[in-house]
View (tube, rainbow, N blue to C red):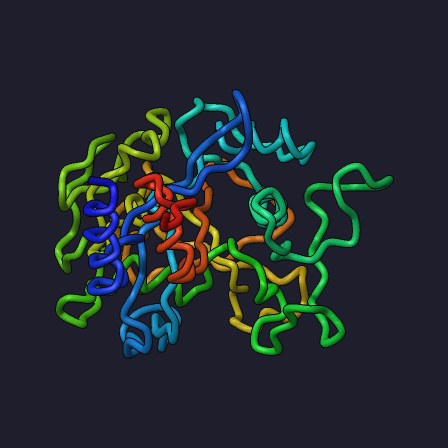
Length: 319
């Protein structure tokens, strides 16, 4: 029976290479400090850029990747702080609320911890690490240089050997506004050119968390409105989100303002539009700005090993 189940899984992996990781969770931490981050696959590499959004052009990505289905929550930051002594500060609203008040540099520290704790390379370069004398969580990153393994001359912020990272302007935009079925971009990250229905919380298609009183606050990350065509939630409304890319698109000086976009629970629908992008200081946090994590697509061998393990055949030998 196990062999039959394995053959079925293997056929799925070989016939539909993106079926095995279309929606999957990666596990981090240990014990009471364990947490999951759900990802959806963003395929269709080499899609055409959008020429109606901000910046212009935007949204063309030459490779497949994964985008966090939800925003990072407060409890994820708390658990990483406990295990990694990161010292990241944030707004306090509730365990499943989006982690706001975290600076770009603080988000980079969190994502470095995700990489290190899973055996990958730190994605962002800092002069000092947790535990070093003079460590400051909001200190600016350094730029990777040609002597560093993983150096990418096209993006001096991101180490190319890392598994997890903040989404770039194009990665974020594609996951939010591009419809892979029709090959078109929408104005809103709910798969439509019509203004989403405003809600305080929920998962109904065509809705987004915006237009509420400021006192209402954001929804839980899994109740942040309808999904994008790829299946991400809350890229419109709930809280603004940080991009990896700086506002002028150069990723040059590490102190440059970073792009933020997507709107929040109390602003109007204009901020959800594909044509709306703002700038924010990387060393500062804000109670209306959060972030989500992107990741590389697992190698086919990883998917296959997962299929083997799921049916108990990882150590199988012919007798």
